[in-house]
Image (cartoon, rainbow, N blue to C red; front, side, top):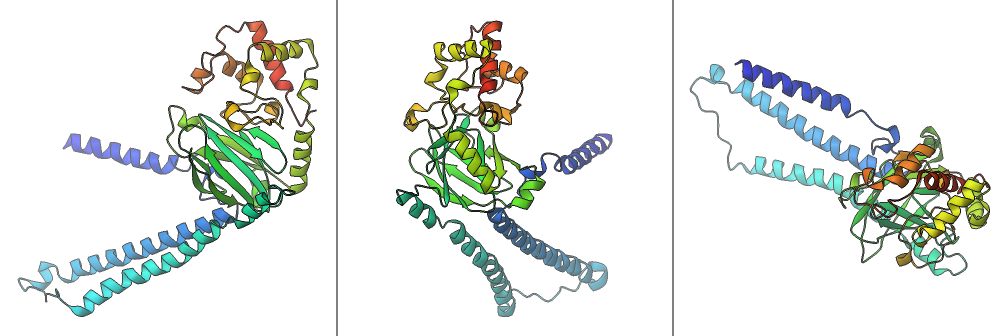
Length: 364
């Protein structure tokens, strides 16, 4: 008896902790806090389907309780209640009701699916040589182990890890993977979409400016497909800005000159090390990198110092940059940079860190 009570108390404790801890985390990393048109549509479908389930469960529970109370033995004695098997009326009722509920759910679901799958404006924008993906804005997303690349084909700009998007307008995405299947997901902005190695998936998102402001203009993106040891660490950030700010950012990226960023002797030493150690073979420092995608084997670092996170997960500061350079494996297991530069001295580490901190489009 005591063992049973102990187990019951532990179960109750874990149930309570589950309920309490489910409310922890970032506010705008939840599908229950929609911040755009797509997220709103999907949230409405979630509410509709949940409401239908609640109604069904409530009706069944009420009928069950009524039957138990009405036909309990103390009330009917040994008399057997009237048997209703084979009743055409009841058969029709419990066949028709589920069909009606499915129709109620199916109509808005199918309509929303077709609406969210409409990428014709993107196809037209890409087909127009002069437009090339500017209006509407098109972003090519390439998923890699364990980082993200974002290309703006209409502007000839490439960046990594931080996705910059204008608010209050549809942005179209081409999704593909370099190695294994991943899944692109910004929970507060819209549902997930797989990135495959052999074909492109396409969809669109739209961020609401007012709700973006409430979120500090930063949203969180995840890989939603198990892809390896660091799957849970394959994060990216979304910066939601006005169209005017977006155009300014694009202009800065297009005019960025990485050869002028190193000002101090230490930063120039770091720049030289970046060349000598072969970092430049994987990491481009020009936002207008025109190499084929197969040659882009690591994140573009042109605006590295402007990002919110180091390696997508650590707070951006000098200490974490050094930690990443010194031992990437301890931060992201199985990443491709592990054991690449195991012999960096403290002086080289300082120089490389200072150089990386000078790679800023905003500060230039």
